[in-house]
Structure formats: structure tokens, C-alpha cells
Amino acid sequence: MRVIYWNTSCLEPAVEAVSGEISALSRHFPDSLIFAVSPHLRLRLSPSTRTYGVHPALDPLLRLVIPVLERWGDVNHVIGDPCPWTYAKTLKRRPTVLTLTSEQGPVLTEFLGRCHHIVTQTAGFRKRLLEMGLAADQVTLCYPAIDLHRFVPTDRQPDDATPRLLFATAPRESHEMTGRGVYLLLETAAAHPDLHLRLLYRDWASNHTALAPTRDWLAQRDCPNVELTVGAEANMATLYPSYHFTVIPYTTIDGGKECPNSLLESLACGVPVLISEVAPFAAFVAEHDCGELFTPTADGLSQAVARGMARLPTLRANARKAAELHFDSRTALATYATLYERAMAAGTH
Image (cartoon, rainbow, N blue to C red; front, side, top):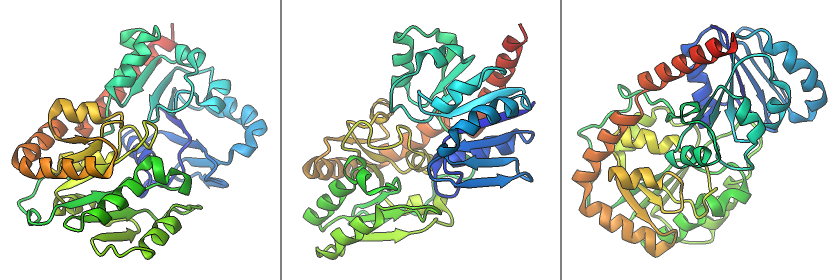
């Protein structure tokens, strides 16, 4: 089975969640090919790994190249937002599976109608698509795959005297700072020196502009309880258990990835989350009682810390239980294998 993974990622699996998801899928389906159109790429040509990436400025050429390349595969797997414009215009010859790793932007209903299967990563967006008239058997809820043998709870836990928060969904661009909740975190840490906050920023291969304003904010204030580190962490599975909570502090509904990988990995490690009530994944956390929700204010976050610290044993147990029920990589990969087979079978009729 030849799968072509059409996407808009930056092809940096070590630092970007969507790139990591695509890389994991391509390893599991080894006859696959990866093709990305992203403003963070110039030109990526790697025939040995069947990975290709181009800048969207090449759109006129892509309209000619993509239909030809599509013939190589048995099934298309488009990964991105509800309006993948380049691929919607050009992919018409092979059955298509669409995974919505982002819920932002307009919904291109004509393209969704042409997809054999659509995968959402939140229950809320699946409900929205069904309300738009898509058939229930056309829309599947499937969370990103997590290796539950790698991300596991440990006996090593932090001292409960000082709440320790990890923020691992750092923004790439400065305009994301407010919506992603960085300023909210910093303001909370400044007002509550009794907690420890670590900001884990990524070292992107291409341009990124969020680091400088973060450093400037810290340089202008005395916040010894804030730790800023930059670079790919060697082993995230051993990092999460050093913290009481992983925090998802979006201040707007579109503050970041709706289903953040740091949240899933944290829960798998038995580390509960603190999540803003405006974040799309807050409903999951509330349903499974694997963290605390908060209003996106400094007071709201500090109160969630206090509530969570008082309930740590229960939240830790529920975190791992939720991960085992919903995030097992074996289940996710089997789901995609089934969707590919169904799409190809439908495409032959």
C-alpha cells in the first residue's frame, strides 16, 4: 500500500508535533511518500526517504506537479486544516483520507465531501462536522499516537512543597504570544513566586520570532522562579515526571494546536494538566478528570494550581487511565490502516 502524506508541516519532527505525527505514520507504512507545502520551507528533496517540501510560492507549478505525483500512490492522506487549498484543488485521482490537526480557518465543504474519510482530533470538531451534514461513518475521532511503553508514570515525583509547571507548547512567532498564553504564564509566575515555571522553547530550523519577546519580558522583571530553556529535549518521557502539571494556557480558542502532543504525552506519564477553559481539549480533561480547568487569568490559573495540588493522587491516576483508553499508538495506527483499506476499496467502485 502506497500512501502519500500531503501536508503543510515544516518537516521538523523533532520540534513540531504535526511533523512528528507524519513521520511516525510514514515509518509504520514504509512504502509511503511525504510531500509538504509550507512557508517555512524553501526546497526539501530527499529521494532516499521519499520526503519532499516546497514553498507555497511555487503554487502555479504545484498545480501541474501534484496531479502527476498523485498517480504514484494508492491513497492520499491529507494532514492539516479544514481548508487545505493547494491539495483541494489538485487531488482528484486517488481515494483520500483527511486528518484535521487544526480546526482553524474556514471549512471547505466541497473538498470534505470528496474525502472518503475524515479524522478529527477532538470530539467537539467531529460533532461540528456531523451537524454540517457529513455522515457519521465518514468522520472518525482518532487522537495522535503515543507510545505508551515509552511515556509511562515513574516513582520519581517532584517535592510537593513547590508547584512545578511545565509549558511545552511554546509559540513559534511573536504574534502568537498572547493567544498561546505565554504572557498569562509569565504574569502568573511573577505574581506567585511560590511556584516554579519552566518554558521549554524549540530551536526551529527556519525563522522564529517568539523567543526574543519572552527574553525581553524576563529581562525587565525579577522572576527567579521562571526557567527558560531552548532546544530539543533529549527525552521528554523522563522530563514530564519532574513536574506536577503540564499547562495549556490558551487565552483564545485558536491559541494553538487543539490537541497538543505535550498534553497527551504528559497524561501518559501520569502527569495531570492545567488547561484553559477556552482550549478545545478542555472538555476531554473535564470528562476524564485528569487535570484542572481555569479561566485564562493569573488568578484563575493560580486557583487551578491550588485545586490540583490538593487532588494530585486522583489526577495522576486518571491521567494515565485516560491515556491508556484513548492515546495508544497501536490503536491509532490500526485505525489508519483500516481507513486506508476502506478508502481504496471504495475508490475501486
